[in-house]
Amino acid sequence: MDEERKIRVLMTKVGLDGHDRGLKVVSVLLRNEGFEVINLGCYQTAETIVSAAVQEDVDVIGLSVLGDEYRIYVPKIIDLLNKQSLNNVAFVLGGVIPPEEIPELKKKGVEGVFPSGTLLSSISHDIRELVRKKRS
Image (cartoon, rainbow, N blue to C red; front, side, top):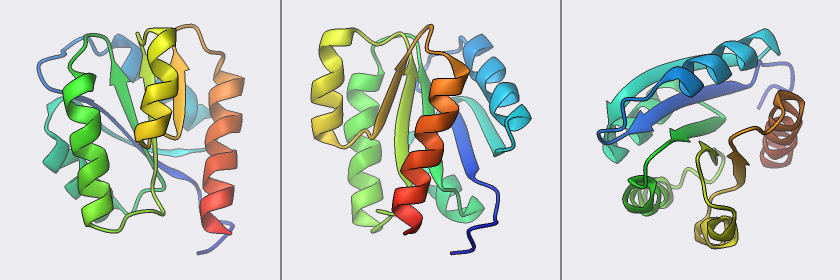
């Protein structure tokens, strides 16, 4: 993979979670940091997210969460990524995530978790590191 290619990040929300302020803000901030951001918006399904990730040839799927629907969708997304052998795509979550759930999410295959209030510099750094590891 071309090391000079901009990191492509697919940002989205799943299920009926329509609170998209965080999604929009982080999408713009990541774009300002030099990432190429594809924002699918709200009300997506696991299938549409993974399909878009394939079509857009993304490096990262960023799922923004507010409610607890992620508990249903995260395993579905990870399963679809595995079924399509998309181990080159990093899967990260951001938003309202109870700290005690983070270790379990990482065990399931979420590679980065960014609770509300995480500094953009930390998000940007961690995403760059994840992609660097996957590209090498």
